[in-house]
Image 1 (cartoon, each protein chain N blue to C red):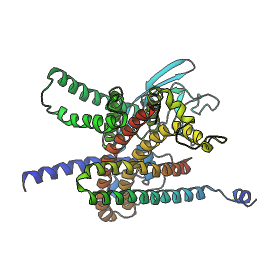
Image 2: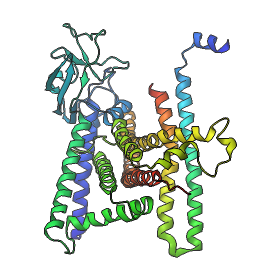
Image 3: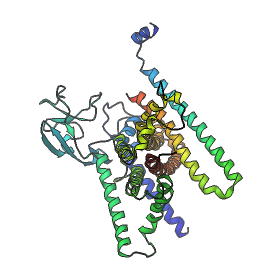
Image 4: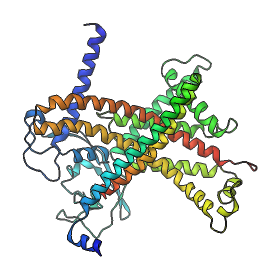
Length: 377
Length: 84
C-alpha cells in the first residue's frame, strides 16, 4: 500500500474508534428509570439498561453542571464544573462533584430530578433531601458545560487573532504566511462581501469589529460543537440564551446607529398609500413588529439550525444501537449505512457552520445599513 | 361540548405528538418546495450566463439559508409541542 493510503487508513481507524467509544459509553448512563435488561449481546459491554436514544440525544444537546466525557465500564469520566449560586444575599460556590451526579444534596441545594418546570435546575433542598417547594430558585451563575465551552472557544479565538494581529503589526507590508494566510481571505471576505455592500463603503469601518467578532464567534462555536470528543461537543450556539444575546447585541447596535428618518419611516413610510396608514395603521404595525421580530428571527434561525444538526447526527448514530439491540447481526447492515449517513450529515454540519455564521453576519450588516435612511428615498 | 367530553375521557397528549409529527413533515415539504424553486432559478441563471456563476452561487446560498430558517421555525414549534 502506498504511504498516503496507509496514513489515511490509520487516521480513519483512530477517528472511528474515538468517535464510537465516546458514543458507546453513553449507553450506560444512569437514566431516571432503570428498565429491563436489554436483549443485546456484548456490543454494549456490561450494561443492563435499554438504550434510550431520546435521553442520550437530549443530554448531548442540553446544558449540564458537569462535563460527562466518557465511561469506562461503571466508572464515569466526568469533568466537574464550578457551581456558583447567589441566594439570599450571599454567594455560594462549590464544585458540582459534590452533587454526585444529581443524587445528593449539598449545603442545602440539589439538582431537581423530578419532572416539571424545574427539572435539571438547582433548587433549595430540605434536610432530608427533598425539594423545598416554597423557596425561590437561587440565581445560578455557574460555569456550566456551555459556559465552559464558550470560554474555551474564546481562549482559542484570542490566541489565534492576537497572534495574527501581532504579526501584522510587527511585520507590516509583508506577504502573509501561516495562520495569517488562513484568516486573511476570510476577514477580507467579511469586509468586502458582507460589510461594504450592506453598510456602504463610507461608514462600514465602525461596524467591522462587531461583524468580525460575531462571525468568528459563531463559526468557532459551531465547529467546536461538532467535534465529538472533549473539549469539543458542547452545544454552545445551539443554546437559545447564547443566540438571544447575540441577537440583542445586533438589535442594540441597530437602534443606536439610526438617524431620525428611520423612526419617522417606521410609522410614516414613503411610497405607501395613505389608506394603509390611516385610519387603521396596518403598515406601521407591521414595521414596528418587524423591529423586534428581525432579531428574534436571527436568534431562532441560528439556534434551530445548530441544534437540529446535532440531533440528526446523534439520531443516525443511535440507529446503529437501536438496531443492535434487536439483533447484533443487524449492525452489520445498519452500521455502515448509518455511519455513511452520519458522515454525510457531518459534512452538512460543517457547511451549516459556515453558512449560519455568514447569514447572521450578513443580516446584521444589512440591518446596520438600513438603519441610516436618507431623507429622500 | 364534544371537545370537553373528549378531554374528559382521554388524554390528548398522543394527538399533540401526532400534530407535531405532521407539522414537521409539512415543514419539510414547504422547505423542499422553497429551496427547489431557488435552485431552479439559479440553474437557469447559470445556464444563461455562465460567467456570473460566482455571484449566482452566493446569492442562491443566502436565499436558501433564509428559506430554511422559515422551515426551522416550524420545526421549533413542533419540538415545543412535543416537549412542553
